[in-house]
Length: 411
Image (cartoon, rainbow, N blue to C red; front, side, top):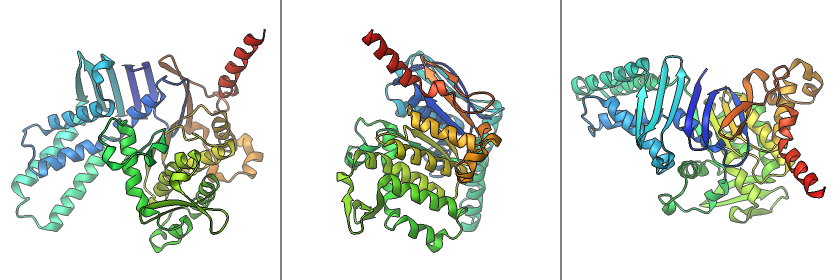
């Protein structure tokens, strides 16, 4: 099991977290929930920095005899870039174990960031770079295109296996409505770097949606889809949440409404529609691809009516169950938590009656689910050991606190 350890990073004091297939974080604002999501994204996307270092070597940008040092610098730069002005965080310690003997540590001491690899991981990284250098210096010039292609395909495989299971990390931040108000020319300004990544992903996906979702599924290119029933269920929920179909036509975005012949241009759509649209499309695009993903989702319920919140969580669960995907999310919505509990209950032996009215694609295995309360810099599990469901008292804790305050005021 992969594991993240955090010590004295921002609002987080001491956190030790085993990474499971379906994880939920709740807690007060500014408590560190989004910080955990960003850390997970960075550690899950470090393959990109290895590929970047390989590319530097192939193009001759670096001739350093120890390219693993260049890799460590790339990782430190990425980390620094993601947070901006890390010196204000003071000394901190972060450790991510992909496997028992494959570990990366990032720490800051006296305002200097350092990156270290475990012995086995460092040895494997050195082997990759050594093989690459040998190929470039001894065989690259005379090698055929087929030989080069085969070599780099093998190299891709080694890099993909460096950090445990190969899953594509996708970070979907809160405040997604910003994607419609920020032009490309402003991306280099002071926008949160997670939002920059999201906006760029949205720009790449828009041209895919020139057809309605049903047509995309029925297209010849989609004949190898893994589970047509799940995709059809996903389309139903996307339409329910958007109240129509999203289409991208000649730089114009619109939602064709349920009433035939009527539509609304996206800038005039509701905040809920704008906030949810590219979370919905990210999930659908991932399912259609059939690849394995690590979804990191901040506040999926934002600006949605409770029924739409339930439909959103159903879609996320469909995506999680589609191709061995993993999901990590934050929420403070009792509706979201109760929906997840219903899915876990349906997946248990005791939930036979619920299971009869709920498609098995919407079930969750309790053993794969964990939920945590993050408060005052530490976390604790809020899952009942026997039922594997979120404790009811924790789901209603926010409402209970408000009620107690009201009682005090009215005494």
